[in-house]
Amino acid sequence: MDFIERLQALSKKVGQLSDSIETEEATKTALVMPFLHNVLGYDIFDPSEVIPEFTADTGTKKGEKVDYALMKDGDVQILIECKKVNEALSPKHSSQLYRYFSVTNARIAVLTNGCEYQFFTDLDAPNKMDDKPFLILDMSEVDEHVVPELKKLTKTSFDVDSVVDAAGELKYLNQIKKVLAEQFQDPEEDFVKLLTARVYDGMQTAKVKAQFTEITKKALKQFLNDSINARLKYAIGSEEREARGANEQPEQDESSAEADGSNPKIVTTEEELDGYNVVKAILRERVDVSRVAHRDTQSYFGILLDDNNRKPLCRLHFNGRQKYVGIFDSNKKETKTPIDSVDDLFQLAGELKASVDLYE
Image (cartoon, rainbow, N blue to C red; front, side, top):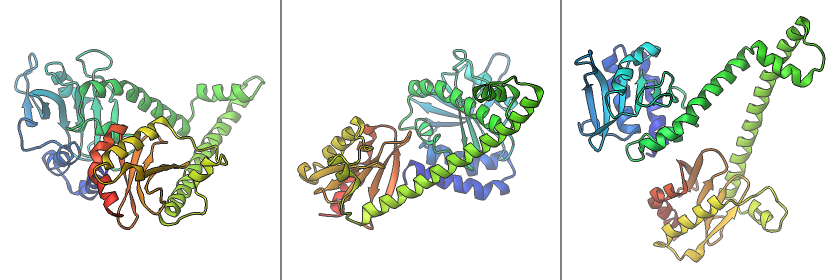
């Protein structure tokens, strides 16, 4: 299974087991250790990678232990403190992490109850753990925006500098999202006042403020519903277009419309062309690269064998915030794998070569 499949499998397991787990130790065994092994890719039985009950003396505090320390090149990289599943995580739970953070080389600390994972670093002051996490993972409902950031913390991809660099934006991004969610639920007076000033030229009397508070609540709910409906319509339309593209040879597909200038909405990016060149380099061992063609559409960048729409090799979904590579099986069913950069295509070399073998 790929990364997202392993994450989803554990998410399902969390939902099935969480109500039957009664202790912190059971939480570690059933939920946290599988997360470290299956999702982050660490060997939980190798003390050079994972040290349980990690001890580090911190001034007057002697012999205290943090539940896990993840190691790389002999140094502590990530500290993990666990609580019982379904126990709400709070700042008091991170006190041990806070102390340990300053006396080890760790730049990342994790507080978890097996269902929620809070990731901390030292953005506010060097070598001092922040009060607020820069990333939160909810295993009961995995946010697609969290997936690429979580992947950076896996053993094979872990680079502490890149993680910390990205943490700054993530921390404030998540806090702003939280503020927006609160405003959508119950808009504050200053927020209502700001919006009112944009659409109403009169004096903001008490009556006007009360009136626009209700109008703002309705407008926010309608805006959210409209956004969700628009996204659903687009998703359904994209699935239908992709299904037609995989199983039918249309008289004129989106890419041919681009060629004759009738579909100006299609823009072939430099990143898509870079991906195309990487795929050709990978497939050179299997087939003459002159047979590997591409057709760009509004919803994906398709790579085909013999420029034949019935011989799809893969699709590059690079238009969204998260990049995906779609690869087909013998039944023309597409499986999407998330990637962070074009270079990650080399990790899918085996699957890409197998797609050629379907037609040769």
